[in-house]
Image (cartoon, rainbow, N blue to C red; front, side, top):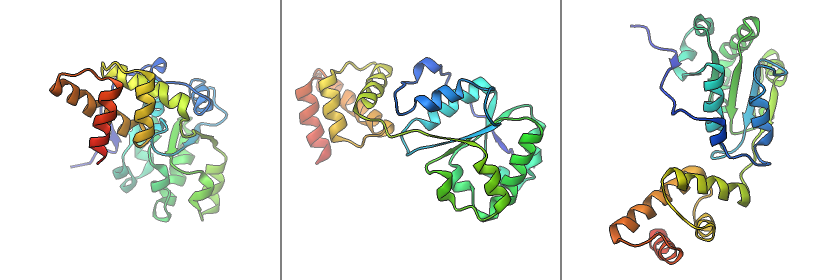
Length: 223
């Protein structure tokens, strides 16, 4: 049986207005919304985990009719990907760009340019850190636009966290939220998880999600 080479999983319907904009991510947002009027047919967005790369990629994928390329596709001819009329997202590209995959990536980039298909490469590190040894491939990659998303600072992280709380239908003051941010790992998933835990505890104990309640329970959870 032939294996699938795309990830056609359904993505939660998102809107650009759902994404909280700040100085840290403004360049990436402004570039993605310009699609298809890009300087090249592919871009690289890099930044640490939790900076919003995946969320932005999902928004662009909806806009650009893009699919996620599975790791399994590296076992096939890269030309097979282009049988479908779509664009592409490759997540964790810094894990993919290894010597054993150089030829596949090189052909993918060439065919994408030939067929005028667009692609978004997500990475935790800048392309300079990939140490690509194949000169032709390095030239292709360095010809792409490269955009950094910085780690959210307090102001943006507070806005993101409050949005998470609203999505979870949790009411919490800015003061209490800042206390949480100073006590937990400052990334989206850990923040969402701690909010869910605190909300569950407040329901179990039949107490409001007040600052004193959060403070006392965070100490217990952290111990």
